[in-house]
Image: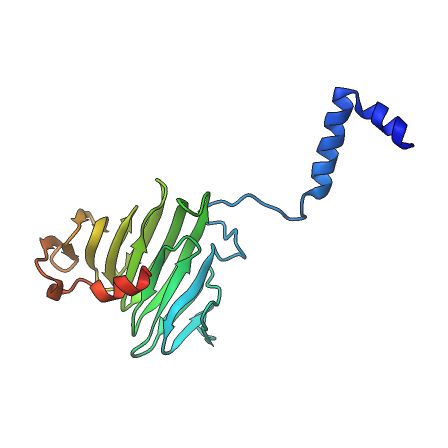
Length: 222
């Protein structure tokens, strides 16, 4: 079909629409998918990479074979991370949200993902904290975002906070708020307060010297 006949054929609106649809289909990359929260849409990791790494950090997918984690390594759902003495690592999403596993820590990554505008995304990050403590930062995100940290006997969750959770159930909040559930007990931990799972109680903290992770949070949020 020569150029004149093609131009005449494309003058018909229905034919033009069909040609555009076929062109778009041809241009679509194979395997292209819409990002969904928790889908691991960026490289199968939910956009989570290792940052702020110091000391000995290892990862395993089966709990038996461990490999060294290096700066900028991808961290995926189902992976278990552990840290040695004087060590820590940030599991950071492309959005800037992160959790830092502190020394002598161990956590298993669960649901991970983000979608939408990176300037104000919807973020999902869930972990099982098996040992030690972690510091988390969840800021500037869209409604519906969440960090969920499961610890021995309970779970702490937030839609926006700077916080610390230990595997023993101590939940401290520097900014924002978290909800904590232990058995039949549910507590809301506001800014500048701490929940102790052992006593099932929330108390206020008065000074920086009382245990809030100020320095760790400052470095995680950079």
